[in-house]
Length: 425
Figure 1 (cartoon, one colour):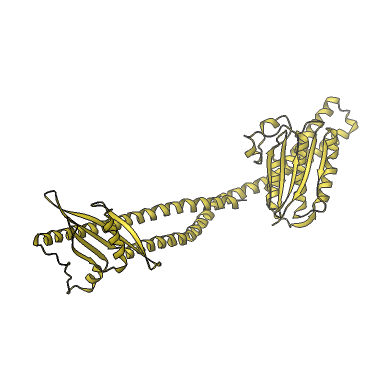
Figure 2 (cartoon, one colour):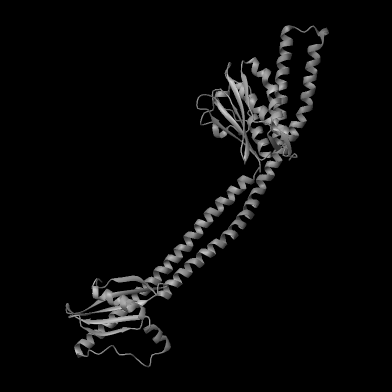
């Protein structure tokens, strides 16, 4: 009974935990990415400033030779210089120096410089597909050389950041994998916590059921004695009871019968035994229900109409299914208008069997629909009828014990339709 509630707790806990985990993880990732990216921007800007100073020196010394290379560079420095490009131009767009060991980027960069499409001081992020299979990423910028607000020249600098991009992508996917794996741990912890949280609730519920069962059982004996005594009094001619006394005895007997039915319903709702599910012919049960209620319907000028396919078999506790249908048909007769019809229809598909009972009563208000299967709940438009509000609650309990469910909806014209859905799985 608490399985669905426990599943909801686990689902909500997992949902909130995952949201929190995603928020924290990606917040940290975004912060780290932002810091790392700003470091790349700072790096290329510093490179641009340094090269503009070299350009200033070369222009003033009129040395237009290529940018010298340091033969004493360490392996780390060589690796660094292999990942950058530098082009220095005078204001007349005369090439002063260049450095570009990235063969794949030469055409790419030359085209950009010749197009003269870059803005000063702005850092650009781009990629180039080498040999139609290797994706290379780089950042580059155009930096002006100014002296007393006089334009002397410009430098183009760029850094290959393929390794940095791949590292960021790798970190992102590692983060996703960690979050995915953590879901199993979160779900495990959620189940443990849900089981621990549900223990007092289940224990309290079992105690309540046991109390109801014990109280109902204890009430049966004195009630049976009262009913037996009333029968003796009514049939004892020597007492010469007055008509008023006989009517009073009849009233007491009627109320005792109602109390007996209430006690039986309480006892049934408190039981939690799992009876053996067996295969039965549903058509035989429908005919039995029809025979049982046809006289009651006839007394109210109500016509029972049945529509069933031949030979439908179900796997269920047949006593439970019979009691469910008896409750639903009895309610349909009770709340239907005189000279009306009640339709009992059976349909079947691959997943389930549906038994629909459609009446022509006053229907159920939208406010009452979510609550009609709660114990002792009665809709406002049923106050004029006798009942204790346990019938539909018991029907739903019995349906759930048989892996079934009861749905209700109002008809378009008048009345309501209760559908017992019996799963085949």
